[in-house]
Amino acid sequence: MTKKDNLISLIQRKGYEEAPVFFNLCPSLVKKYEEKTKSNIPYQEYFDMSWRDIEDRKLINHDTEKYRSYYNFPLKEGTTIDDWGVAHEPGSEAAMHMTYMRHPMKDLTTMEELESYPFPDFANADSSHQRSQCDAYHSMGLAAMGNMQCTIWELSWYLRSMEQLMMDMIADPDKAAFILDRVTELSIIRAISFVEAGADILFFGDDVGMQNSIMLSEDMYVNWLKPRLKKIIDTVKKINPDIIIFYHSCGFITPFIPHLIDAGVDVLNPIQPECMAFDEIHKKYSDQISFFGTIGTQTTMPFGTPKEIKDEVIKNLTLAGKKGGLICAPTHLLEPEVPWENILAYVEACRNFKPTK
Image (cartoon, rainbow, N blue to C red; front, side, top):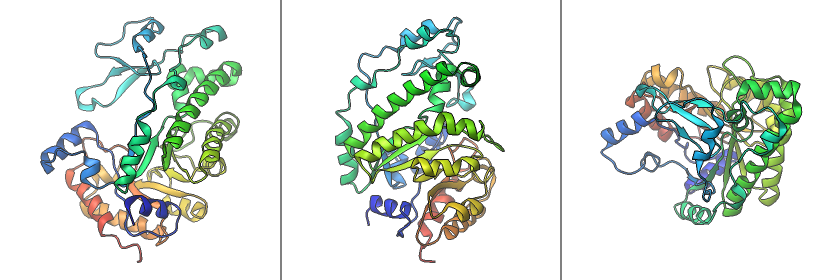
């Protein structure tokens, strides 16, 4: 099996030959990787990960400086503005990958102001690079992924602010619907582009869980977010019924799992052990959906011993069984305090696991 074939077979719960390895490193850990390995290749390649990301559609003549007029206060020195107009003020040196977001649509008060906001023009963006990237990954035996985490909810509240968007949903639903629909339309354009280029996987996501509770009520989720996510998934699955849909949400989202399955999600990420019990989730839903994660980045990865990490990997892969259904991986970005030895322990445990047992 190629890495791609092995991954897809595992996700489809048809058996697999090796447990895939996957993690993301923060900037300081990337430096540590380079120091420890003396390697100049990306760590995804060094650790032989099973997929690579395709670059998004590239916006043409998109000057983000135009968004500065939406901030009626001075932005911190070093602030960057992303393609959507969201300003990211830099954090501390110790957490330089973290930013403080400012929301360009927060203070807009009329529908006319919302409708005139310059959303990024993905419809006329350049997608010429996507097919060649997919072909290159496939020639290497790897899966090609269109990574669109922050798909509807998060992009919308990044623009409007979470507090204001939630107030709109209750008191001014036309405004909320406009923003959510506009973001959904742009996500569909981007998703179609990835699929038509030959992507094997689309990675959607929106954080809708907190540590011990859901972020919004189940009724609000069903009324506001589920139909829009389902619309995106239905659109791409009409183009390619075999496209695999990953979905990310941190935190406790147990009440939403049946809705995500109904919307067409194939793989749920990340199953944080600090928030949800994998054995319970697996027992209830493992015949309907596969999983990605289960190795805690709040607990096990930074504070466990290498043996504890290996034991956790073996426990979870064993629970999933020889048919698969689990990409066993750290649940989020690995932060500066994660010891290098723990990363190697995770990799070793996956490499040595025998799925026939």
